[in-house]
Length: 547
Image (cartoon, rainbow, N blue to C red):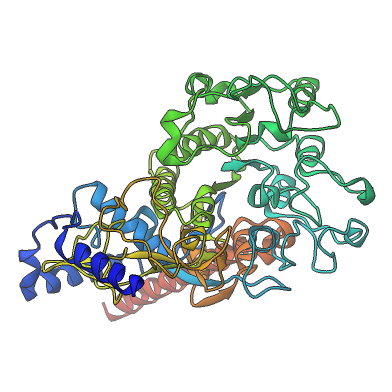
């Protein structure tokens, strides 16, 4: 009886006490059919201008990886970006929404329907699908078993590009030894071996060691992860204790070893850890850069300005990396990861996930600036490694706060339990913990500011950590050979297109890459010009004979 009474009381409260509802921007002009007809014609004209693909060799290749940035995240992120600019949001276009070629990527690992970032990173960077939790090794390797990984190592597009004399770079908001960045250069049957390997797994090197000892030729490495490079208890300017409470147990100082390697090669290099040093860096005088802005991962975009030492945005890091790498006349390969989109989703924190998505789109926009890079020389691929158990539901009115409760012009929409619910929800995760009990049921959101950065959206299945989603993710592309992304692809196809377009790896021969198409096109043009001259000459002879 008490449960019934409480339920009635909560229902009445929800029905009578207002929840803050955003006021949409007027869309009266959209009520006229001419608005939509004109909008469609403009888009049609843009499409007609972009129908001719850029056929040629990609001097530069940039892959932008939104970790966990599935279709729902892109849509919700787009709306948030628009609302931050004072729009309703739905009509907004993110930077990569404007790319001319779009496809879908099938993300499954060899051994799992729903993948992780290690197996997927290996797929789109090495061109081979593999098992969950393993990096830079084939599916013959068993997770956590060092001996099984012998003879299974795979090379990546970063390796292939470097072999052709190109500059290379890694930019991420995670630890630089995390799954995605590690997939460019490491080989391990266990993604968690970032700074140590279990004693019973001798023969494998941890990811941080591989990055410094085997890959010191990478020109740019920016992200977080000082704890993977320095010994535990090493002094650190950003920790509360003044030293690292997590770190290496082998007493290695890999940052110093990286410096020593650069100095031994007489290179122009710099190591940095804060925003001031970053801002003062001269790309023209720096060829090798190691920047570790946090002991662990970098801050979420929503918290970045609170960082003790200050952190650059993903867009700022992208610009600086390109400025360093583009000095190489042979071109470059660059991986840019918005890695903390994923982390926020894992704790059901849609607000931080979407703000990081907006920051990611801003980074992509930097690479499209004509003053920075030539579109006809630069293939840009924007994609995700996997999705999340993240849903966009209800029937919110136009311009409704994407982080708010479902509402329209009639007011807040109540669920069948008589309580408000948010537009964005999760299928599983910590947002559901403690919310379902016989006395109260689902949490009452009437007095909750769901737009607050710290708010965690509700979930159906309680879990300590929300899981990834297994649906296809999008690929957005522009530049040389971008038209090869069409339809639905296996995820490992991405690496092959990037290699083919830039003539590296298995496609390094001019006969086996985009260079062959350029030669064919030039030959065809030459043949056409020849026939044209013959026709003109024939007409002249005919006219002379008629005189």
